[in-house]
Image (cartoon, rainbow, N blue to C red; front, side):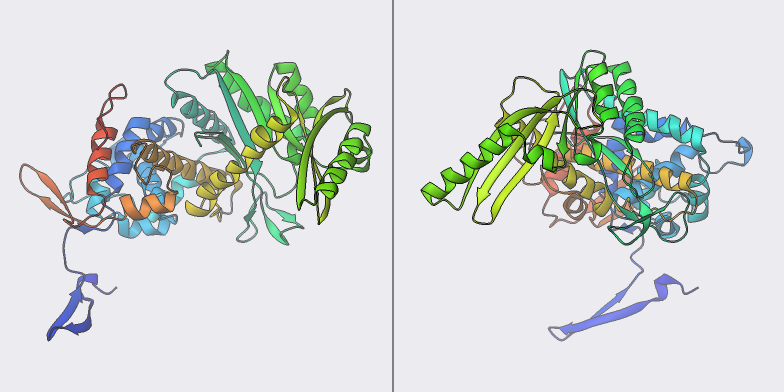
Length: 455
């Protein structure tokens, strides 16, 4: 293998001076922001909580890397944008990653390599994964200082293409290939991740959804018995089994409802649609929107439920969208335009998880290993979420996406200097976010009940 320090190259001459380059700078990192992520991980304690649930049958006298350190290195790498375990073969020598795991850059024993990471990804069995899934819900509940009075949980699924003949994959006619359709659950508003379940790429049945929802809600209820929970999702989740269970348990729901001829012929909806079209035509408007509500029961429903219709007449024709809900009191317009349409934010959260943190890299042969990967990417999501939450409210990066945070706060060059009594991290003098980085370092290191002043 070629020694990387011997690789040299050059760039165009500048003011009659040659510009030569080589990878011989020594202890320099391009991911100095991993130290901020490590501070966030210490505050959350998420890796240690996961490691205690995975059986470790190794001989303690022969262990070089604790299970916590192995998982921590993998999670930090994902949060830094290195979604492949192969990247750890190089990152295990990175001085910033060494510091992030509590090791001095000069120590002879480096971090765990890719084969070690891959073995542990494939270690958890189904029972272990179930325990870890419960623990991730506990992490979510612990992220609140006090139980909230009410929460809205957005539930949705997304498509992950298969990379071969992996277990549990299924043909999806819409996407034209085999894959997974993992279920994602987030807390609306804050964007906290709640639960993630790997499953085949087919439309979930009512019984399947009810099972997932029942286990999720019961775990949350163990922490927050008095919190009002509202479940929100698209038409996939408007199943009679789910709605009946939510009604029996006192859980509010608001789901999209696929349209049909019976709904279009409903007297209330038909009259409102006719009035909407006449109003638009008389005033020469491009579009006009109305809302109404009715009671509707599909053949598979045992009771009639509250259905909200959003009716829009335009030059393009008539468009009717419907939702079903157990929420009482709110007006039809508020329920649809504010309470339901805000569900679209869940798509952005899925994008952060799947596209920006590459959680769709479910390429292991074993379904259990792919579920474990989903969990590790969720842990990385928590770290970036925690860093973003610590940014002052008026700072430009307060609502930045994860890729922006990685570019501005993680992908930072620094020289790491180790002496007999001190390790110094020398960031670039021209770093544009130096004030914010210093604030985050203090904020994430402060006790949970004390926050430093914003810069």
